Length: 231
Image (tube, rainbow, N blue to C red; front, side, top):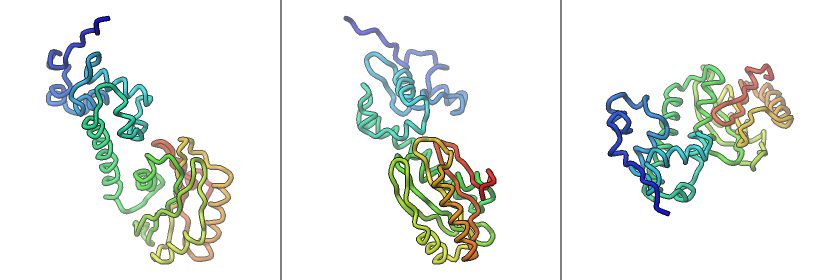
């Protein structure tokens, strides 16, 4: 059977070509698939770069976070995606992650749960296991330091309360923001999460260290204990 003919992007109308479209209309006018097509440059014998990009995105539910979790080897399973193209995609996604982190760290004053979420999210968004972090704050709620407390498994993480308060005391923190991630994407806290938070709030009062919030990070969303009246 003779392969179907795929029209090269070069033969598309100028306004439909991703590069030309970006130059004429700006980067915001491009779809995710068109942006990825610019990165890979070409498709395969049966798909244009844009069609191949659409298929890759469809396989990850059109979610760039899911795409960022694919390994180089995963990307190279697609016909037309070799080592260089898979590295280009991974590099672009990593730049996006670092840009978001740079924006979060520009504002060192933590005013609310969203500020805390943006700070934590950079460290947890691609994780396939749970981690627990603390954000150490001074009396003006400015960030002193962010510290990882522990690594866990797929759906749980052990937290040593003593380690949290030891880290806080060593850095002269007057307040803490707690955070852990749920790789499943669900942000609803478990009974264990609630019990841990209550214990840390009680321990903090004895040391005059205020627990401002506990953020549960999902997939580009979060749950705030403080916003929900649980602290």
